[in-house]
Image 1 (tube, rainbow, N blue to C red):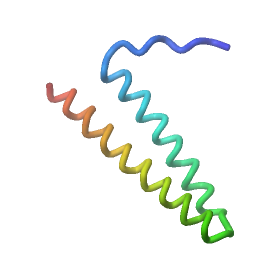
Image 2 (image 1 turned 30 degrees about the vertical axis):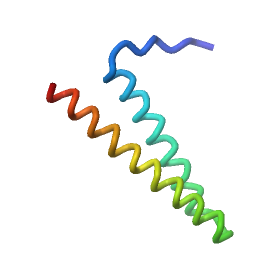
Image 3 (image 1 turned 90 degrees about the vertical axis):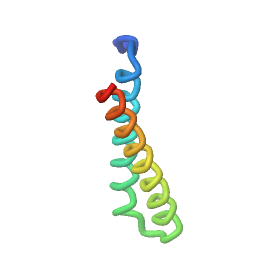
Image 4 (image 1 turned 135 degrees about the vertical axis):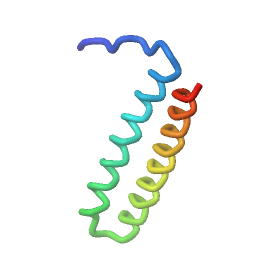
Length: 68
């Protein structure tokens, strides 16, 4: 199994985190669409919304890094 290169900068770390958050969002969104049990669908919606908040937070942090 190949190892990932080390994350060197705050921007590297945030970019990696952003990719994981987007992956989690897509996972919850896809499963939310197919959930037949309301309680499960509600949980997936909540988790998806939380990931969306994380995405916005990380994108704001990256914007601040770019602006210096």
